[in-house]
Image (cartoon, rainbow, N blue to C red; front, side, top):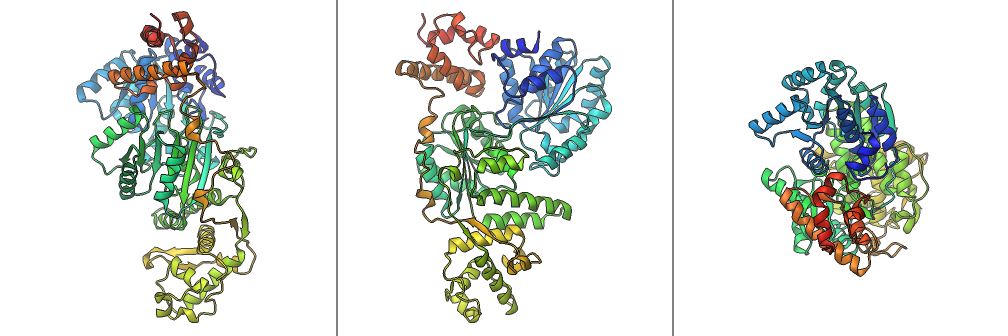
Length: 615
C-alpha cells in the first residue's frame, strides 16, 4: 500500500498539508529527518504514515519517543480508532500490562510503540531493541519534542541526551526528530546531540494566521483577563498560564466565581485530581484550564479558542509553543498576554540566580530580551515572531498592533533621568529602594519614605514630573531588559547601575517604546467582529445543518465516553460540520469526507446516518 493510500484509507484525508508529503516520502525511503512544524501543523502524520508503510513492507516496528503520557494515551487511542496497531509503555501500566505489551512488541504485532526516553535507554529495553534489530524488524525511531535535547531550548530534559545511543547502536535505522519550536541555535544543538548532522531538515512556516496575537500592559491582570474572556470567549475552551501554583489556584477560583467553567492544574495538586482536571478539559466543552507550564505539552485538543498568559514566559520559543495550543483546528483563536515590570524583574532574577555558566546565562538573557522586544513592539507581532525563527512575512492585519497601531514616544530623556536618580540615591548610601520609590523621586512625590530618607533634597527630585508612572515603568522595563539596570534581589529588589548604563546616560543609546494607555483594556480593535461569534461552528451552516451538527456532537460525546477518549479523537468538529452540511443519505455519500477513514467508516457509518436522519 502506498503512503497516499494510507493517508486516504487509514486517516481519511485526500491530500497532505504543507511539506508533509516530502517528509513522508523521505522517511519511507529510509532517510533521517529533522522536522520543524508549528503546533497543529500535522507532525504526527509525518512519522505515523512512514511507520505503517515500512511495517507493511516487512521492516518492523516504529519506536516513538515522547516525554508526554497524555500524548501517548491520546495518540494510541486515535490510532486504534483508525485501525492501526499501536501501544504505549509508561508508568500508568501495571507490571502485567507492561509485560503483555512487551510480548506483543517482540512478536511484531505492534506498528507503533510509544515510550518515554528514560525507558528507551534502559538496558532491558535496549536489549529488546537489539533482538529486533538483529532480525531486521526495527523500522524507525521518531523522537518527538526534540527541542528537549537542547540546553538552549525552552524545555531542556537531560534524559534526552542519552538518545544518541540510537545512532551508535542501531546504525541504519532511520530517525526523525520533530519539534514545534526551535530557533537556529536550538536546531544546531538538536542535530549535534542526536547525531543527525546528515539528516534532511524540513522547516515549515511558523506562521499561524488563524491566531490573533494581543499583548497588553499589566495593571489589574485578573480584571483584564475577566474582561477578555467575557468579551471574546464566553463559553469557549481556553488555557490561562500563570507562573506560580498559588496564582493558578487564585485565578481559577476567581474565574469560577465569575461563572467561568475554570479548573486549576499544577504539579502540586494530587495526581488523581490533576488527571481528573485534564480529562475534563479534554473531554468536556468550554472548560478553561488555569495552569503552570506543567500543562499543555502533547495536548492535542483542537478547539482551544484562546491561550492567555498572566505572566511573561522565559522566551519566545516557550511563548510560541504555548500560544500554539490555541486554534489547532485552523479556526480563529486568540493569544493574549498581560505583562509588566515585575515580570521582567522576575525572569531576569531567575536567570541571574541560576547555577548555570555565564555563556548559558547570556543566551537566556538574549532570549528574554527578544521576548520583551516582542511585547514592547509597535509593529506587526506576527512579523516579529517569524523574524525570530529566521522567516520573513508581511504585516498580518490581524494582531493588536495592526488593528490598533500604538503611539510611539522617545523615552531616552526619561531613561537618563531614571538612571541619574539611581546614581544619586546610591551616593547617599541607601541600599533599600525599589522601582516605586525611584519613580516617586523622579516624579516629585514627597512620600513618607522619600522624606524619611531625605531624597526630596536630591537634585533629580521632580525632574520627571511630566512623565506618568506608566510611562516610567515602561522605560524601566526596557532598561532592565537592556541590562542598563540590574535588580539586587538579595537587597529587597534594589535597583543598581551597570556598565551598560553609561551608554544611555551619554545619549549613545536611545529608548523608544510604545505609549502606555490607562484605558487600553477598554479599547477595541478596528475589526469589530468578536472571535467568540466566529468560532461556534467550523463552517457556515443553515438552521437544518446546525441541528444535525448539534445531534452529531451529542452522539460523538456518548461514543467518546464509552471509549474513554476525548471527543476529537472520534471525529474532529470540522468532520462533523461537513457531514451536517452534506446531509449524507448513504454510505457512498460518507466516503471521501475528510477525517472519515476506512475503519471509522466501517465502525460509525450506520450510526452517523441514523443521527442525521436517514432511516
